[in-house]
Amino acid sequence: MVKIKRYLDKDMRQVLRRVREDQGPDAVILSNRRVEDGIEVIAAIDYDEALVRHAMGVQPESDTRIDSDVLAGMAETDIAPPSPAPEIISADLKERPVESSGEGESHSLKQLQTELTSMRGLLETQLSGLVWKDASRRFPLRAQILRNLTRFGLAPDIANMVVDRLGPTDDIKSLWSAPLKMLAETLPVVNDDMLREGGTIALIGPTGVGKTTTIAKIAARFAMHNWPDDIALVSADAYRIGAKEHLAAFANIIGAKVYSASSFDDLSVTLARLRDKKLVLIDTEGRSQRDRDLSSRLAAYGRNADRVRFYLTLSAATQEAALDETVREFNKVPLAGCIVTKIDEAAQIGCVMSALIRNDLPVAWLSDGQRIPDDLHAAAKRKTWLVNEAVKCMRASDPRISERTMAEDFSNVSVANV
Image (tube, rainbow, N blue to C red; front, side):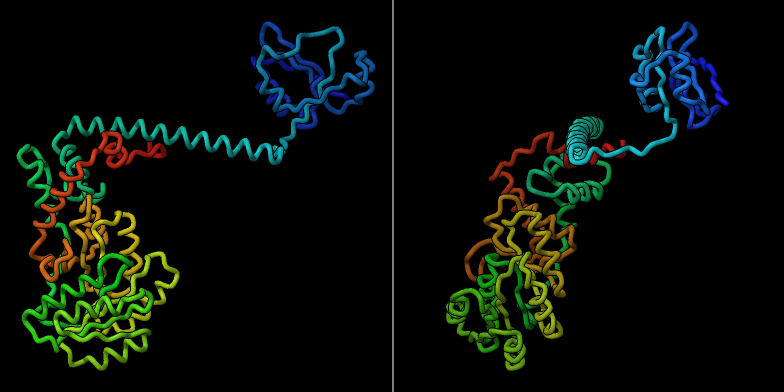
């Protein structure tokens, strides 16, 4: 039995909802039109489509099937006006899965995601600027201290740590002195006794950081208060051409002997032969922190950890990201500390200071030139000196820090949290 019913409501979406609830998903919309009170829809169920069309004078070819969700989304101005021969609109009220248009839709989605990412980045940049501007207005002294620390290369997280440890800052006279004093106190150092007690020392680190020159400085300083026969230099660098000859040139000056170890087994045998030496310095090959064989070579060095103290050699002229990466990779060997070289070549010493503080790696020795043995200093006695050198480097290089950079580094704004 055919069930035809008239529905009237304020908009098409409400009408279709009533049709769905009343007649179910198999209902067919016979006509729709706009009236004074809203939208009028004629719907039917359990009908013979041919008989209805014949009774209404509608030809079969005029049949147009429109999804109810599409019809519901149409604006009222798009609703067809009544006509003498209304067409039958079959409304399949069942929910249908959205069909993908394939590669074209995928490209559009990726393009939309790219645009949203760009908009998010732009919004975060704008918000960061506002947050930093507001913070600078409310806490002008803190903002100026952060600018000063940033200028000589200190990373944002370390700069914030230093300022937080200072506590409230309201004295303009302490803009420089108080933060630098706190930075010196925060820098991790170790009071190394190798020049007094000796031992077996191995310098490890990337190529070109000055391991061989630093070994020569340590050996020369030790020889000033001990016999040359108490010192042995071991070249474990089988990769760099002339590595042993370079080390031997320094050894001849102080009268020490040089031994070579081309493999880890040779190194173990050599160290066993040199047990009676007061100071044994091992010059290892330089390896990039990204070297695929680094882990295995460090593991091999670690076999001698019970008799050898390892010191990571870092160049102060290296970028902060590379320093962090180097410390993480070489820390697979138990490190007794590190030696910072090439301080005289650095534009911003704050970079290496940030890496040391962040990774809690204590520095034992500082080197700031090529003179042997003069340009080697115990870090425990030179913390303030290192901070002063950082200030000198800053004034010499005169880096420019924009307010936009400060906003990006210290605002920590994320659209996801706004």
